[in-house]
Image 1 (cartoon, each protein chain N blue to C red):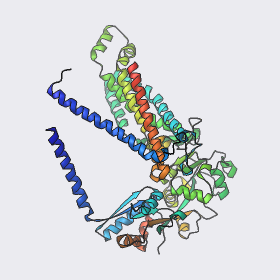
Image 2 (image 1 turned 90 degrees about the horizontal axis):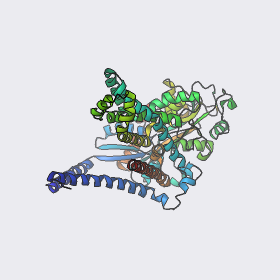
Image 3 (image 1 turned 90 degrees about the vertical axis):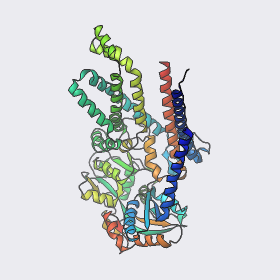
Image 4 (image 1 turned 135 degrees about the horizontal axis):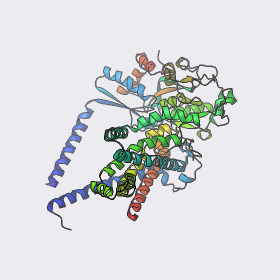
Length: 273
Length: 281
């Protein structure tokens, strides 16, 4: 009796499994993996794309730019997503810019500091300056907020300052943009850096943060668009081979002016006009 | 030992279930070992305790600061939550008037049901700024201990409460007949009777505190360092995995699985110690 119960269970699960594997490929599936910055944008574009190509399903998974590059190279995904330009070691891949993103240094709104130069930012992040007084602020210790290793935001920030992560002396390490914004909003002496789109949106909606200008150029979506803001990055779709068929259709769609409202709605900056 | 037919069936099923649980545990350990193998096969196990820091991008993999952060935050939370939890259970059982006791119990049950991420968010937006006024940066070992203590308090309180509730009424009657005071009864009769159940509740809470990820990730600050004081920012092993896993590749990924392995060993060690302690007492 026990044996037959087992057999029935086995047959049933095999049948369920077979049902799903046999019926699933009836629709064409496009898998995108990679940067958590690009993913929400790709998902929105995907939704619009699906409505125009009813036979296609877009599956977006996050895991960081590094995963996007890796998956595209190993062809685990049809398209990889990366929030940075390809490195020299990645020249075997093709990249297609769909939007731009900037990184802004953020301070608490009530911090009297209005601007910092590059050297001051380097000294703060390497622990040479530990008090706001040294850069003309109030007499209070600085809380340095850094990103966890592996994030492309961290890579871009360190690259801009010419630092290695071992040199950075943080008091707080955060994961995503929202955690960074909440940390700085809750601590008057904190300094951090997050995507401009997210920071500008939060600052406009009353969160207690402010965006610092760099080289006298205000940190804004507008200045990322005209490419005058120094701390910015492209959001790329990555493929291993010259895209064809449905992959090409999706990439062309993502680069067309048709998706600009989606890009702007997520506080990124469109490249297509 | 005599077993009836039904007992034999049940015994077989129970053995099967035990075997499955044990196999799953063994598989998890094997999986962790397999995933950390790319790094372990170089043979230098000591690098996980002797490297100067945790900077996986530069191939530095010291996990000791995170191991001690996990231990310290758990220990701190237990030190706060255990006496409070037991006191709360005693109040609820023996001191609170009945209308208060049922309402109070509902509140503790509600506390146990709040998702940990909500405690984390509260800690980040409310508790950390308060600690920051006292001593920056706010997000710190202390903040993690307080949030964890809040989270495990209901676990300890509820298990202690039901342990005390399970004591047969005859003990109360006998104690009353001997004219013991209320506190004397609790201290010398009821608590010793409920000791092992309360201990099991504390073990459960310990497991929850060690394994907690999201709440600690939000409030501990996540800097990898040996804390000099309660106000220093620390990173626990679980937070480390959650922070970096999504972006890790190659040796970095393997190093995170080594953190997972270390966490697993720590929990096995703790469970073993608890077992030894139980047998010797």
